[in-house]
Length: 89
Image 1 (cartoon, helix red, strand yellow):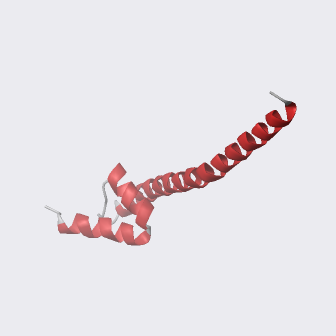
Image 2 (cartoon, rainbow, N blue to C red; image 1 turned 135 degrees about the vertical axis):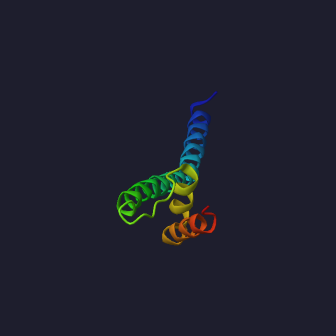
Image 3 (cartoon, rainbow, N blue to C red; image 1 turned 90 degrees about the horizontal axis):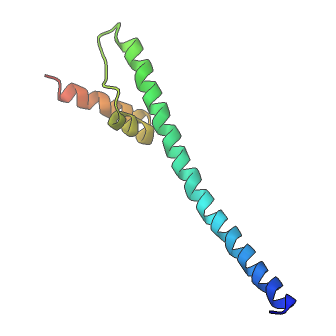
């Protein structure tokens, strides 16, 4: 195979790799942002339970509550509190 064809094939492969990296980094960044938000939701639940124990209001610290709070933020925290109040026995 002549050198010219090898160079052209190399350029196309390099361009394909760069395009693939560009496409996947946006998705990886999005997934990492969601994971960080879920971890922050978990931490906020722990802190709320530490403060809420003195008042008598606690919320279960689990993955589902962390996901709800991580994805929805403060409205998600209100949702978790309302669901706890609604289903309290």
